[in-house]
Length: 73
Image 1 (cartoon, one colour):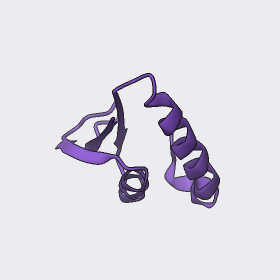
Image 2 (tube, rainbow, N blue to C red):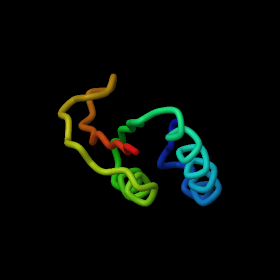
Image 3 (cartoon, rainbow, N blue to C red):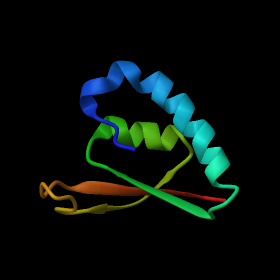
Image 4 (cartoon, rainbow, N blue to C red):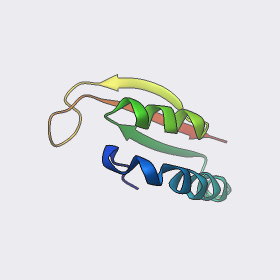
């Protein structure tokens, strides 16, 4: 899933659907990872119960710094 800074008005709906699917997915997987390049994305991942595992320099295809997040059961 890609969350963009330009669609913040849709975040409540996206959040609810993502939280629901994360719970389902953790029944089959022991770890789910995500990365983000902006502060609002970090806030959303934290609200989903994910924990920041580190910051990566020039991580994505545009050369932007990113933070790596994960949730485990």
